[in-house]
Image 1 (tube, one colour):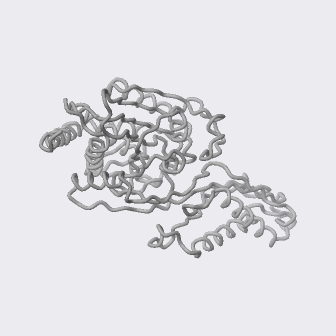
Image 2 (cartoon, rainbow, N blue to C red):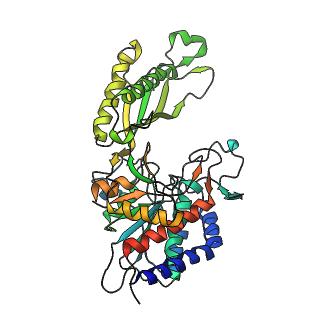
Image 3 (cartoon, one colour):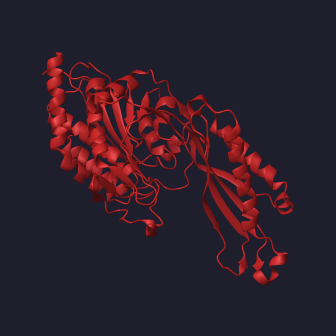
Length: 430
């Protein structure tokens, strides 16, 4: 294909994205209004499945992850809940005739975290409210806007009459926020490609490194009593704070060690967060049990199992410094994230093609970033040999009150993805 013809097709696709923009915003509003928290993803997945089939004409499958099967895989994270009624969705655009480019996966997670406490919001978290050039709502940034962008990038290509030179797969998955098992199930099912992009919202930057993550649960027993006998009881909350303080000391310990090369520029790359604490049911009772749960980060190249052993030993050593906890040892378990960190070579072709696409659309140089969180790209890069990165829109307050996304940046991502798709997959002459 001549450069002149490629330019004409590029312009045609960019024009189509502009023409479809109001549709894209409406699509984002629609999926953002589904409260797709953990266990409640089914309804929005049904909507996307139907959209893939009826609007995009894709070869589409919807299936529930097989927990028994994926639990045997090395990148599985232990789940304590049912997968019933919580499907993943795959839509395929298959090339016809000889393949001239590389196949591609565009993937986004449809699950979102809880908006609670809703009283802190100035906007309805499920309202998809637009004010100025921002849309507000739970999950609009993380990451339903990215899902809209990847879908409408393909839609513009299809409606412009462009024939891709390799297969393209659109995937919406569950559980990125707690296990990553949705992405794992799709890969294990055989939906593979030669590259993958995930439009996670890291501000029009490409991710080259991310930390690993584990979740830990600690159960501390005390000796309950009425408050009038509190001097003869043992308060489980107070004893739990000994171990919470120990985790704060662990956080300082790991951040004071030599940093991984990708995180040298980040002052505090490894976060240890106490995310849940449950105890007591009456102000005048001394609580006999306290359970707290924490999220712990670690560097690429470290084995999650080694980190679990280190954390457990750290907590048990802290217990031995207390007379009660020495006798009544805390119960320490792990569930959810068992996620390795990832460090990528930015000289890979996927980064070069993405960089050129970004620069063509924005007329600015693309930046790279190392993130102190985890994403699904670990499965692709570490276990399936598929080069993958994240590149998505701009916004703020993800996982917080008044989460918002910049709508102009969503349009930029849509155009960048469309440009990337045509270059990576190739475009056929008619």
